[in-house]
Image (tube, rainbow, N blue to C red; front, top):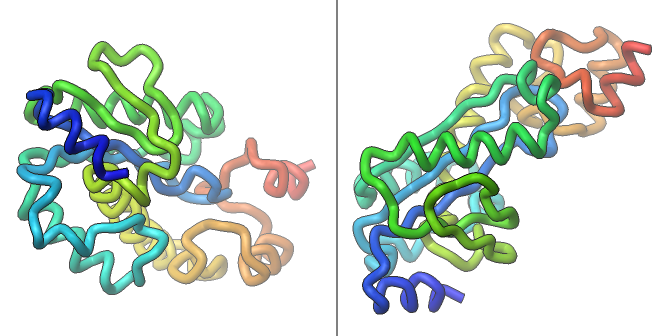
Length: 201
């Protein structure tokens, strides 16, 4: 499927930006949306760039730096849990995608996204099914979003050690559920999510 990038570049449509998010399904912590424009998505050094979920946390940190080295521009937008609650996760995600593209230092000619087309974006864009697995610039954005968010969650673990954020990163796990039952939600939990709302009712 990397032929999508090849077709666009062969047609002279450049630069290309990839967009992806991290934390959409988490019930705590921010939603992070990233956009990346690579110098050359087919550079041999970028062969290790894959969907962030397929790579270990330590390896993602290494690839994070590699993406920055091979990028023309990188943009990351951090959307707080409160904003996710106020706007809804889908609306917050779409707005974050627009903001991430607008935050690039160069204007892309075309934008490729993972899963959702970006409504209201002036730049032509295409949603690619499982794009974070098959399109290099989307995979690169996936790495940037995931590492940025993981770093935030490790910091939040220092502020709220009772929840174990450094381990589960705000997603629902047995440990997280037990901590919520014992301590109740904190300010970083998304009150619009069903499991958190149930604890507050």
